[in-house]
Length: 128
Image 1 (cartoon, rainbow, N blue to C red):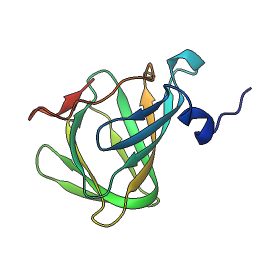
Image 2 (cartoon, rainbow, N blue to C red):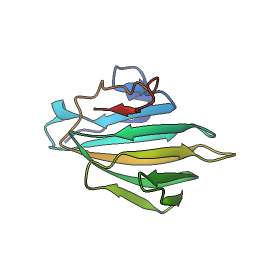
Image 3 (tube, one colour):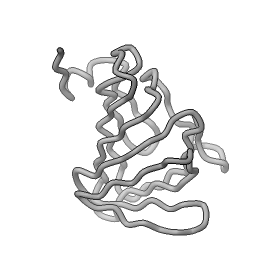
Image 4 (cartoon, rainbow, N blue to C red):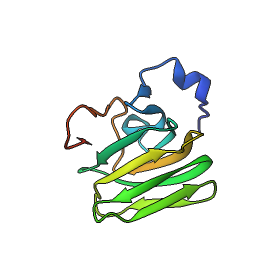
């Protein structure tokens, strides 16, 4: 058994500025659990085109608001208590709220190494 907290993670390479927010990688591949758990903050007013080609992801909103949009143009508002699930390696737009950050608990399977970072510079978005 072990205990890890956000402040501890911020002092390591498990704390990642991913482009439009931050990710505390609380569990990663090296922990041997078979999945990753992240505390993810999506900056208010931001938009990110993302795709996880090698991971399935579920995100549970624990604070703030925002939205996720699939590539068919379906927009799903996200608020505290909502979960969204990318069960088909879905390419998607992730947006922070207009006036507040979106705060998520993100679960990845298989686990992340922990140092992955998005490159949001290209028009095709970021994928890993």
